[in-house]
Amino acid sequence: MADHITDIAVSTSAADELKFQSEYYTQINVDLNEGAVGRFELGKEIFLWFKKGGSSKPITKLQLTYKDAMAKGLSDTSYEKIDKDLNAGAGGDYVFLWYFRGSGEYDTPIVDIQVTANSDDDQDATKFAAGWERLGCNLNRKAGGCDIYIWLKRAQKTFICDLTATDSYSSDEYFFKEGYIRVDENTNRGAKGGKSVFIWYRQTTAPRMALSDLQVSITDGENELYRLKGFNRVSQDLNEGTDSDNKVFLWYKRQETGDPIRGILLLLQKDAVSAYQKAGVTVIEKNINSGNKGKLEYICVNQ
Image (tube, rainbow, N blue to C red; front, side, top):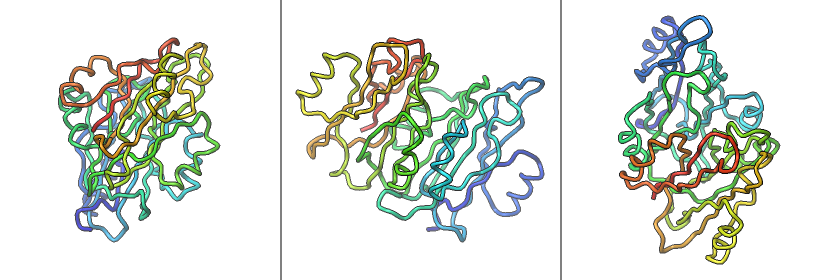
């Protein structure tokens, strides 16, 4: 318990920093607004803090929101919001951090948190390959400046045991209650007319329960190929509502003889592909926004 993170906070002023220091929090010394420029000035200096071994139960999940509709499912399922905009003063999306203290089958305590700001692709790739999880949303989303991400490490190795996707917020409460984690970046980002589509996954500490293969189809021929190979299809089109005729689907397989999948990540920088591949991460080099004018997005899998 002493190694588990039990409390998390965000400072946006010198007074906040003094308060958290007096309460024995540890500061992550990366400005969450680094490089962001607001309409009139640089964004505020914002820092993330955490405490281990406090009186609270361990934190087991972190989520980010960048629009109001993303928040309802979290607030309805006992997630707690840190009500400080991580993009304050920077002019981008309003980004908020939420945390959850769970003790269910799909909850594994978090023991470390790090933040990277435009870090070296090789370092990020090595971190992901070593079992760190990256939250999906860039904290400087639409604010310019550095790409800033939160990373977390758990008390035990975890593996992805379930996978799904949604194109509306109506089922968010159900999936959060069932222990799913939402990848907080829209797979239709930047696509004209596209719905807000999110990938969700659930974790286990039992490798025998894990998924062992993940693929993406962007053509009818690939759909048929993966069906014949015995893959299961996630029914949600990741390009739902776009002006493209392409339908993009996730396919997965669960085999006891395969290498268990530990993590999944949306990669939005093509230049980073070689670094992740060099680190042993599988990059599915099929742009899930293929056929529309949305942002390039690749899915990475760590096994």
